[in-house]
Length: 176
Image 1 (cartoon, rainbow, N blue to C red):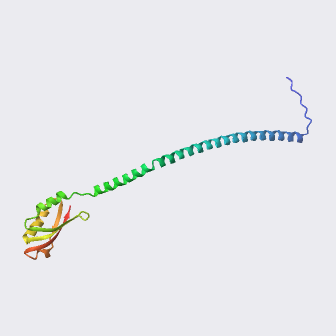
Image 2 (tube, one colour; image 1 turned 120 degrees about the horizontal axis):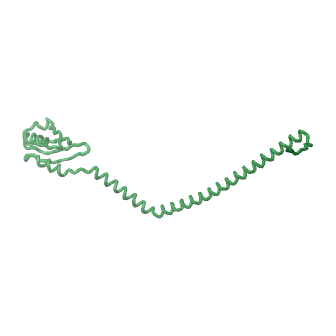
Image 3 (cartoon, rainbow, N blue to C red; image 1 turned 45 degrees about the vertical axis):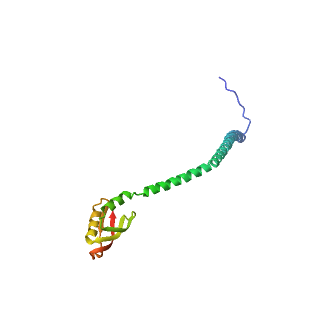
């Protein structure tokens, strides 16, 4: 085998300088390629951004046109929902007193005359005001009211039992 002969006529400093120049040129070319690749990626990303912004603007326009088209319908739906909520609240607070008043009136003795009957659902009280012919009739009224299942206690103030006949009374009964 024969090795080719190379003549090196350059001084060692110039040979070293030439090697540095070759390495520098290689690094420069490598950086240019990297810069071109980064530029192409940036151009691609900018193009994608423009496409996405255009798509977003079209969607926003559609949403605005749809919401303006159906705004009256949405207002009607909101009003109906508010009305339904109010009706539901009223229905939840409704309590049928009719049957209970009939039961109470059946338990009132003959000799009792009522001037006022008031129901306080919030405080769960029934107030009866009227006149009893005798003290026994008033006590009988109290005993009759206690037998009603949805009533708890009925207390007659002692001051209302001082007379024997034509007693004016005010009776407060607690509801269950």
